[in-house]
Figure 1 (tube, rainbow, N blue to C red):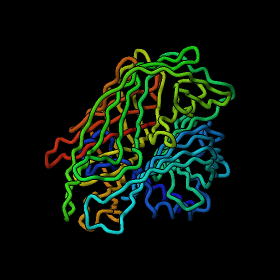
Figure 2 (tube, rainbow, N blue to C red):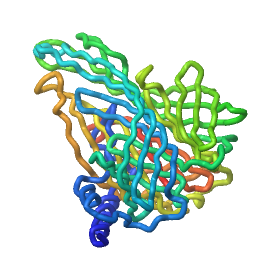
Figure 3 (cartoon, rainbow, N blue to C red):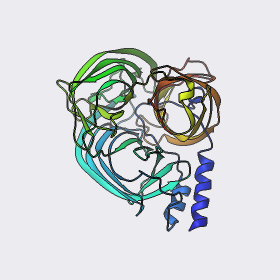
Length: 464
């Protein structure tokens, strides 16, 4: 068992010794909306972990384990079916028994293509939106790996969720086979949520049912990142300013007997002010209740310095997302961030004749002086939207992986704003006051040149 565990560690460490979010914008191979985000664990590693009789590869850190409040956001693209899903609830991580179980309500929206019997007319396409909501539960095994890595492997045999836990064990972030999970350990009494915060968000949307018409543009959804800064929580109300960066693609069917479409990928900005009632229960479960909208479920860390909640209404409006926020710092500098961080990311993207999704995980090292090195591995699913073999290209789905090991720079503002500058792009976001949690957004718009034709909207989360 010990040898099997060591081989697993070596495989995971090798896999995670490749890639990097800092230069992510430069080396995208494809693009996407909606998206399935997949983690960096391949089937061979998964099988090795399942074969290990005692998968406790790393010693149990103090504070890890127990009941956590969580939120998750995921998406899926099969070629003819696009989905967005949200879930909130609790997950019980038993590090002694090496098991986990979870339960909570789940909401989803799906936009599926209905193929006509006669596909000889290029514009003869229809898309139908459906929604669902139900309580979902499950469980499986827990494996602790080197570098604060944690793997939750469902007993159902689905691909595992690979991620990281913070050094205190109170925060866990995971990349699943189709999204991101953020979990905070339950508090013993209601956390105090108040003061100045800032945060980031990632959202997607799927429009209502529609039929394609010749010469009339249509799109299969939008993706957007948002920066919530400043944010004030006081007297049971959260308020602030949001700026959004939206990515979309209009497609026009030109008609005729051949499959002829024209595409325009575009980015736009917007935003405004917001205000909503907010409440926290005795375990740290969060509820944000914007006027005229469904309540957004979420979670707060026990110290009240971190929060996450779901955004949008998949069942009602066909939109979904996740917001992650943290308390503003003061007097922070580059020296506030140092050491190794476990990172996970996921992103939407679009490009000529394709849409794709990408998830990434690995290690980022910050030297406290503005220098950054990283080793990350990424996995991507791409859907080719051309219709050379038919107007419903459900089989035009491919997967690939890549690795990056960049060497770049970062800078930290006094209140915790962080910018990472890569050779071909910049990502920006925030650090928690103690420097233990990092969140970033990425807004990359392809220039249309041969070497850079794709656009992305993404999210990165890191734990020290």
